[in-house]
Amino acid sequence: MANGLTPEQTSQLSRSGIRKLIKTYNDSNQQDKATLSLIIEQLARTSLYFIVEKDSDPKTGTLRFVTLSTGGQVFIPMFTGPDDFGALADKGKAVCLEPESYLRMLLENNCHAVINPFGSYFLMWPELIKNYLLPFTIETKDLAQQKNL
Image (cartoon, rainbow, N blue to C red; front, side, top):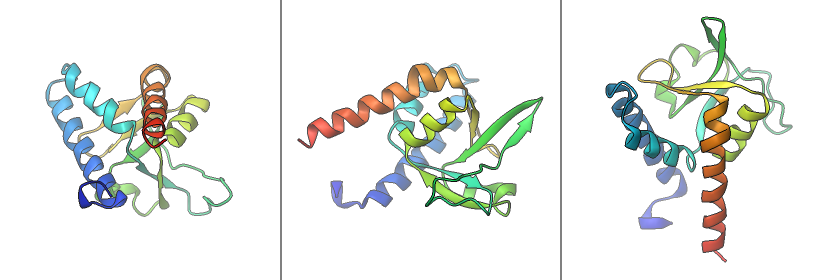
């Protein structure tokens, strides 16, 4: 336990921080590159929530994600917390996934994603995941493992 916090408390703080960073980034009309870097850094180590169809079974790895579409583009919605589920709260059940898992899944399926689509949101496209998010996530995980050796 770092600083007396449980892992879940640490994750909750990280998700809250992501929400605030997204708002700051959007308030800058997506021009604040320092805030974008902080968002990427936080996403690399923070689990997020997804809504999956009610007949999905996380134990067997069978997850059918609820999707949103606009302008012909399909997005997988991701959330920093249950308060952000909005209209999708009753459309399925929530699962919380680790960054490497959800980033690999999005990349393997060439999916676009949107974090907190019903408020101040952040779009993730395959190139961002491939070129920045997934490599940074893997590097962060590797460094943490080396530190624990």
